[in-house]
Image 1: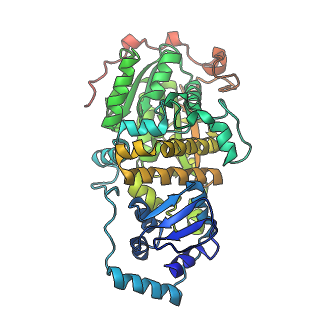
Image 2: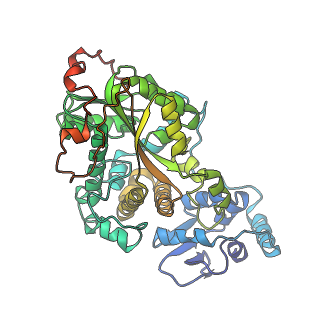
Image 3: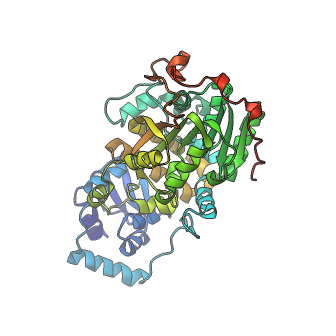
Length: 486
């Protein structure tokens, strides 16, 4: 075991690696990676990549005691795992003792079936991730129930460099402690600021009709209706999300203005909408379906209406990054796709932002604004990790220890990816022109004022060349909406 691990991580790992018999190597650190059983290395011998380590961690055969972010520093110390004689002897000894077949994968591993990105397979993939427990998501996400990047610059310090350690503590604050109520966390204020930024970019105002594709638990629609007076439709293929979103809307007294449908984006047919939001949805669409996705949204949007697409993206040259990224180590690396695809987002696909913009423009949209919120997502993910770790026992009671381990690992690894620039997240604002009119001000000022100070209409909505609300069809004149599916 020592020979194998030494080959994988080198002789001087940044944290202590402890074996099941009490032996180990590395510094005496507050954080330890504990290999609890030889079964862990047996998995790695059969899958000597991130998936083997992921399975061992999810199964509880490898553990992290202490700071998960410190443990993931091991990714910088990974060796080439050359098959030295000592490594081969160790591997042979493990196989003789435990047999020549790999252990079965943990039950939490997804096994999607059917044609990729068919309606049914997409629904199954979404169910694997989202139909766990609404209570679990509230423990992790906080009272905002928003599963996308928050906007921290408007509600707290904005570090000039990638946030980590004490900087993160300063931003998140003591309100996220184990005894604090969930709705007291600064995370909720940061999510509210993100919702407001989306609404401002979309130019929302009273009387507009909005479509939110992949609406989650309805948080953005609730904000848009409360603060901007819109009517709205949200679509999701997650039954758990749809059920809770409808209850939240009813509790808010907005059921006459907001509608949640259990519906695939390909089946929405009751446009036009004045504005469309797609927040955290494009990652689930798939590269092959991007032209269909954006063409459908274009057809659902009125002329001079706006689309806001908010999605995670690879930076340029993802193939080059993949060649240079370490693939072995004592922990799985969420930077690769095996772990994420099997345990987190089945069939999820990330795209380079330029490719997304090209597909949007090919569908007929005109690009108006792009913003990268990479550092903001790092802060958001660290806040989620903190929530999960501080409410660990309650989270395990909701979804089981294996699934809770998946979430801890993937969110911590993703935070480090965003901090290092290995992943980005962009808000892309586009319009469907009405002839030569874009319905945009000459210089939009989305966030030049505090979020509790409304901007003047001319800064958010229409340029002198755009139509006015009185020239658009009234809400009563629009086609009747079909009954929700489900």
